[in-house]
Image 1: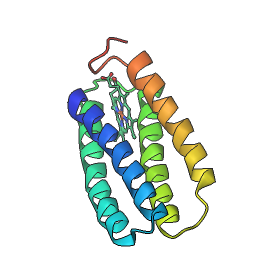
Image 2: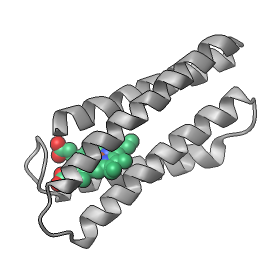
Image 3: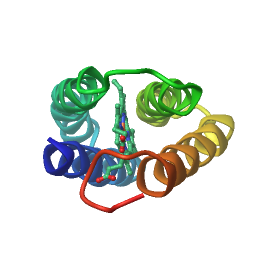
Image 4: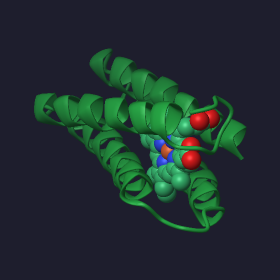
Length: 119
Ligand code: HEM
């Protein structure tokens, strides 16, 4: 499940980069289609993250913060995609994206027990 989780958020980062690059090149249709695929990928992140969460027997504060950071990262990705395709400034969402992802990576890989890297 950790492999699916990691794969699905790596795919989300790649798809977001494609959405941003296509909209900057003026390819609105390509950006829209990629954005739709990105939204399907959110489901994979949520499913695999939800599954990892469900395998906990006790829920300490760190895993709760990890889940919130993951949800925050998805919200930022979606807002960046929306703002960029609408040609509106997305800087504030990029900042939130970096904070949320760094938090999720540190907690997920560094402090929490499940997954492929031993904490
Ligand atoms: C872009 C968004 C996300 C990123 C970058 C991310 C990152 C990570 C990382 C790096 C790990 C550790 C994997 C490992 O050790 O092998 C992890 C595990 C986990 N993630 Fe996420 N995640 C994201 C979204 C989510 C979401 C939305 C949820 C909740 C629905 C979630 C819930 C979890 C849980 C419960 C774990 C297991 C923690 C553990 O014990 O290691 N994640 N995530």
